[in-house]
Length: 373
Image 1 (cartoon, rainbow, N blue to C red):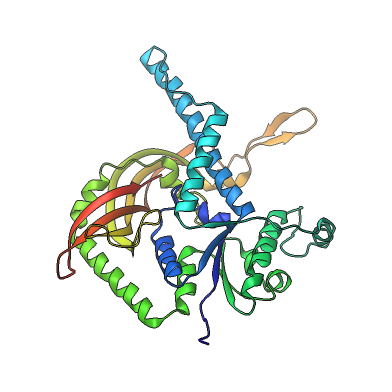
Image 2: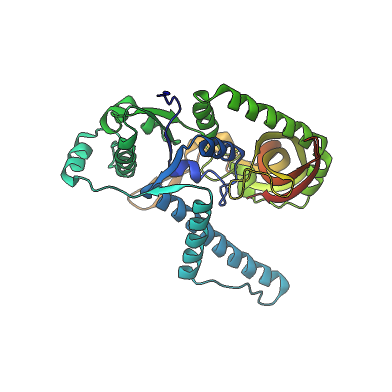
C-alpha cells in the first residue's frame, strides 16, 4: 500500500475564519480547498469555532446597523428634517446573518464537528491546575473544547497527520499535542498561507509544480490587464476601519490611533496573490471560462489626527479616589491632537473569470466581485 504523506484533515479555528471577509473570499483558502478536493482531505471546523464565527458577524452586522441609524440622525440634523433608513428588528437581523453565514459555510465545503461528550470534573481539574490550553484568569475553556473536538474526530486518522490552522499559539504547543492528539501527527499553521505550504509540502511534486506554473500564467495575464483592474477599483468604497486596521481579526497593529481627516490619494500598486477558483463557486472551467481569485495591493495616502506619544504614555491626568477630583495634569504631555500624513497599504480581494482561446492562452477578463470592507 502506498504511504499517505499529506495531512488527512484540516481543522480551522474561528480566528482564521473571522480574519476573512464574510463570504470567505481568499486566494489562499481557494488554493487550499482545491488541493484538499484533489487529495480527498477533509476541511473541518469545531462547533465552538463555527458558532464564534457566526456570532462575530452577527455583532459586526448589529454594529453596522446601529452606525447606519446614527448617521441617518446626524444627516437629518444637517438637512433640517428627519432622515429615515429602514430599521431591522434585532432578532430578524441576527437570524438573517446566521442563515447567510451557514449557507456560505456549506458552499465553501467546510464541515462542522459537533462537540463530543466530555468529563466535566476532569476539565475542572485541568482548569485548576492550569494545564494547557487552560491558562491564568480562567481562560482556555473554549480552546480546550476545540482541542477535545479535534482530538475526538482525529481518532479515525491514527498514525497519520492532521493540520490545525489557528492564530492562537496554544494549539501549536507540544503539551497540547501530547494530551489531546497523541494518536496522530499534528502539524500547526498560524495563517492560511502557512497552511497551504504545509499541505502542499507533502503532496505530489508534479501537482504543486502545475499549480505554481498556472498561478504564474494567470498572474502574468492579470498584470497585462492591470489598467482595466485598477479602473474598476475606482468604484470601490472602503471603511475607515479597513484603512486603519485591515481585515477583522488582523494580526497586524492598527496603522494609527486617532481619526482619519483626509484621503489625499488612493494608488493601486500591484497584483499580489493569485489562485484559480472561487471558494463559493467552482474550481473548473464553465463555458470556456476559468474562475480566478486574486488580491490587489492598494496604498492609501492619508492625513490623520493622533495624540502625541508622550500623552499616550502619560496615562492622562491624576485622579484622587477620596473626592473624585482631578489633582494634576501632565505638563509635558499635551492632549492636543497632532496632524500628520502617512501611507497605509492594504489588500483587496477580487473574484473574476478569464477566458481561454483554443490554444489555452488567456485572452479576456470579467470581474465578478470586489471584496472590500
